[in-house]
Amino acid sequence: MGMEILGIDFGCAFGSLSNGKFPDKDCLLPLISKILGYCIVAASTTVKVPQIYKILKHSSVRGLSLASFELEVVGYTIALAYCLHNGIPFSAYGELLFLLIQAIILVAIIYYFSQPLGMKTWIRALLYCSLAPTILAGQIDPVLFEALYASQHAIFFFARVPQIWENIKNKSTGELSFLTCLMNFAGSMVRVFTSIQEKAPTSMIMGSVLGIMTNGTILSQIILYQKPAVKKEKKVK
Image (cartoon, rainbow, N blue to C red; front, side):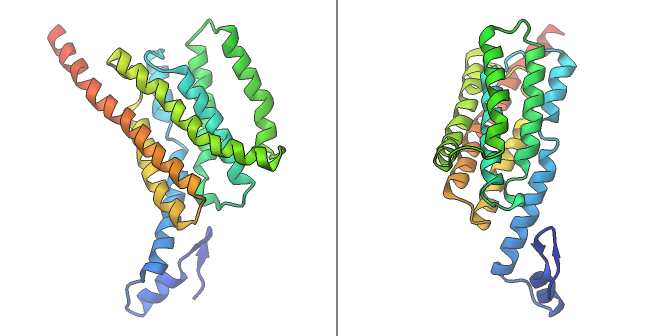
């Protein structure tokens, strides 16, 4: 019984149910993986909107590490380019496209509220604008492409470290959005499962595991450092 929508095969599930049987594991797990994969892609279209909104609402980038957000853009660019040019199913990486767009908007907003910008910041921005199109088009040596993809996990790790350190140093998470961090954490957890089911490269799975660790750390910091702030406000009143 064939019934495929967006690359999701519902045939085996409906076939089993129509015969009064519960779908077996080999049928159910790939189906759940595909559905979750598209759910992540759908959720990714708004994952950074709470962070963008919070900055615009307060007209402040207090406590945010510029280096963290810049490195995120680089990491998303490399990861998206690699997936595009290696035939990986869209449901296994689609969120990268929307995350990259939002990450670029976020960096632009942080630049706007961080005026005046230093010369080093302008150089980094120009370097990215000149190299990103070539990487996304896949017009680089395959060996270099593999090396870049291998490095993107380190890039994402070091994208989180400056923000984690900034939070520890300030004993505050500033304008970090709890909702955005929560969605990042949940997305990393689900992506481990979908990557395994889609038989994605081990490096992709390890990248998601790393995401769970770093996003979980930032999420716990937001929870930890918000409590004293609330108590302090009550005393002032």
